[in-house]
Every structure is written in C-alpha cells, then in structure tokens.
View 1 (cartoon, rainbow, N blue to C red):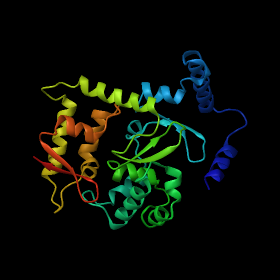
View 2: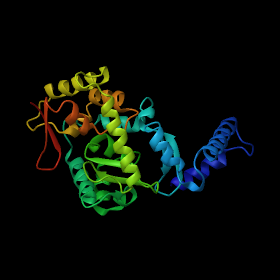
View 3: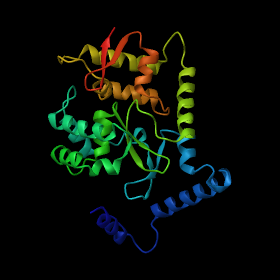
View 4: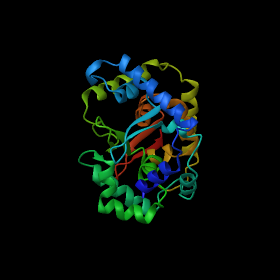
Length: 277
C-alpha cells in the first residue's frame, strides 16, 4: 500500500519541477556541498552523527523500515501540528491507567526487548505484538507513536549507528556505539552542570510544580508510575520546555534535581512508581 501511494504521488507531479520541488532541490544541494566542505573526508564523521551531536532534538535524520533515508523535523518541533487521527485516538484512552489491550501490548513489547534492544521492524513482526496491535491500534496509528506517548518512560525508540529504528528498555545499556554513548553522557552531564546548585531554573520550577500538581490530583488506588506522570499534558508540556534541545532522561532529572522530595522505586512489573516524600 505504501509503495502504491508513492507511485500515485509521483504520477500527480508535472514533468517540470514545481516551485516547492525547486526549493527542496536547492536546499538539498546546498546542504550536500556544505557537508562535503565541512565534515572530515572519508566519512569519518557522518552527517547523521553531526546532526545528533550538534543539533539534537531539531531534526530526525535516518532510515525507515524499508531502508530509505528520512529527513523530517524532530517530534518536539512538530508538536504544534499534531496528527488529528493520533490526537483523536489518544484522547479516547484513559489518562491515569492503561486499557487491558494496552497492558497486553506493553507486555509483548517489553518481553521482546528484555534481553537486548530489538529493531522496530522486528518488534512489529512479532506474533504477540501483531496480535495486540490489531486489537488496539487503528490502521492510521503507528506503533512507535503509541510507544512514545503511552510507555515512553519504559521503552525508547531510537536510531542506531546504522540508521535503524530500535526499541530499547529505559535503564538498559544504551545502543552499542561507544562514541555515541560518550557524547550522550557528556551532553547530559554538561546539562546538569549548567543548572544552579541551590535553586531551580524557571523551566525546572514549572516542571517540578506540574509533577506535584499531577500527584496531588492522582486518585487511583495504586501509586502513579513515571509513565503516568510523563503522559500528563501539563507535565509533558513542561518537559518539552525543559528538555527540547537537550538529550536528558526524565528519570535522571527527577532523581538528581528533586529526588529529596519524591520517592521513585520500581513496582512488581518493573515500572517506576512515584510518591511524595
């Protein structure tokens, strides 16, 4: 179906490049020349590595499940134009708990990634995941969107060194590329070094208050999990304002900046539960 849509798209284009195509062509040619002049020769540093290291959170550059190159704004840059179908689907899901169908899908994905990170394409093909997605997700909803919005505090969807989308359990060993691991750790440490030691930045205070407001309004019998907190609209908005251009883990920020006010511990299912000290 996707291939047919691509053919239909090209069939509708005129023989001569449109104005939009000319603009895209010019930008790509300029980017290619600039990259060739600036980056070390011999592909020592790829354009994707430079993008991930020097402008994280601004654009996504990698390959899709078919191995084709994808260049698009990063998700935080696209939040202002949410997909209506996705927004409609998410609005029908409970904010403070999971549907049973969601729990089944979550368990299938976590089980698939327990021993080691797994490619998104492989996860999608697993019988247990296929069965759950057919029950829960409409055809227009991507599995990776559900993962990010509903279990993003437990499962990360990342791009590895080969450009493949990979599912990894949060807290597990990062994707195996030492240079990337070191760069990510260095960026995270640099971020925390820039924060004041005896006070909060305005963005931090906003995130802190959003978390406490969420916990104050939590009415379910069981304790709220980190995932419940992360998907709260006010908390999600504050997170975007705080971490939009920084590769920082939400759990790390809680533990290092407000760990004296909150208790964060795993529940029997391995999910981080939040409780006010």
